[in-house]
Image (cartoon, rainbow, N blue to C red):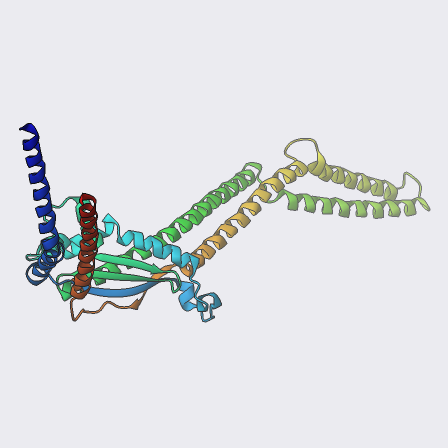
Length: 382
């Protein structure tokens, strides 16, 4: 009896399985192909909201590139400027950043604009969306691509209306231009600030050395010890020459006068007075005291050398500032709009033929896979 019951249960299970497989195979096309296609068509016909796209193309150029009249053969051969390429990639990252989104939301009320999507639940932006979800939604509504051959940055923006798509793109361009200007000006300001800091240090050193020179002159009551020492040396040489001449005259007098002759005595006295004056002038130059001209001249020369060195250094910093200004102006970067955004005349999304074709292809592949799988199961059963 138990064996008969088990046999009956096994037969019923096999029968039910056979019926299920047969039914599934019979309605497989409807389940896998027709039903999903119907859902897609209903969504496209009733729920989907048309989205419009505005497109622009920009390039980042340096001011000297714009002013240069020479041909760049590398660019003619399709090679982009490495500096411009790096700047373009920086700009691309900025466009996709929360900072750009915050600026757009402030100017365009971005969150409010995309929350009015009608019945299109797939492209709806909730007013209570998190910051991360808001950024992800924004990234889905903008496409930024860089062409390394031409060096152009292609910016595509979407909107539920042609006007918003255009305004979206224009605002992105405005914020991108502000970003490029700020980035290049910040570099220029940093370079110029460094040069001005060095100039201020050089000016302070120059002022300090000048103050030291003036203090030395005031404390020693002398304008230029070197000049005074030179003048004293010249005077000594002149007096020595006079003395030599007077000694010659004395020898001439002694040829015909006695030693005690008034003329001889007068000549000797004059020579002695002149020698005393010579000794006095020499003592001013070479005497060992610290306030004598030779020592003063050495100290003065050292201080004067500091002033001259700091003066030249200050001149160099002034020249450096001017060069920095010129170089900064030459390297300023600008956002050059190659193709301006236009008001779209027709919607770009959803691309109905493309969606239907892709959806149908996926359904057919899934249908074929399941059909093959059911056939394998049925063969194993037999």
